[in-house]
Image 1 (cartoon, rainbow, N blue to C red):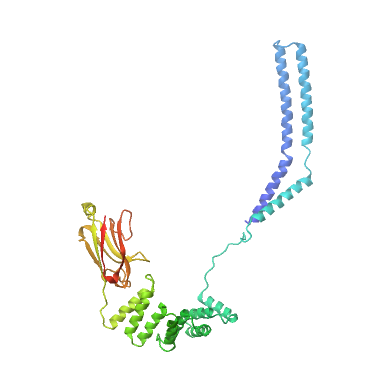
Image 2: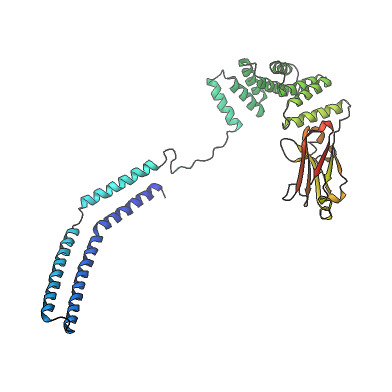
Length: 389
């Protein structure tokens, strides 16, 4: 039901109660007062008659007291009658109507004042869906009809058209952006990638030129260095490609997703060149306290693993062994890696972990004992000593 209808119903009920209050209660109060005075007078007369019968008073006193009771009752009834007449005078209808109207207007004004102006009562806001690529493309084209000098808008349109597989339209949009501002590194990288896609993934010609221009502006741009490695690989300059990709890898944050891509490319390049893929290992020496070497812990599990120093907490490489079978040293290599796409040798800054667990569950449980090492570098082939108490 509409809130305004509820509000109107409440005003009507309030008005009816007001009218009842003005016309009903006074009549009932007058009737009760008269009845009470008469009953009290009769009771006093009965008491006088009992006193007379019991010879507690004589006839003269009885007559005098009876007259006084009668006179008092008459005076009280007369006063009650006057009050009754005065109180029973009804409130005029026009005054009652004025009060009802005032009550309604005051209530409505208060309701309108308290109701938020920017939140319509009858409307519920629906969650908006993000625009699709097609919608974004249409809106950008409409925007560019009036703002043809906005190079960022042309760059964004080029990326959207590239994602929509409209390579020809993407190249035209990137060219507009390039003509307006040829010093934007991200635009140059995206433009070069679009040209290479149109050339069957060959970073030659204009694509190579754009990559060189990007590196002239920012020699440490990881994306531009990645494309420069592809340019070198296209030219069969594999040593140069490896040097460029290693430099790009060193500039990426440790938890950057592109690190795995570069590490995989470097590993494939090493295979192409017939070089052995370097293997790395981490040796972990875990010393258990005398208490933990007791029989009650021999069937507990030791979870010994390597995890990234920053980023996801899941293990990169792990071994799980019962305490009774543990010899004091564990060596983790690529063969212990949890995921084939994220090998130990592809990691750099890591932390060694030793966790003693009764259940052997993958996640740490209440009561587990866990020890962490300082940050170590996998490529240093480190040896870590940890004391588990």
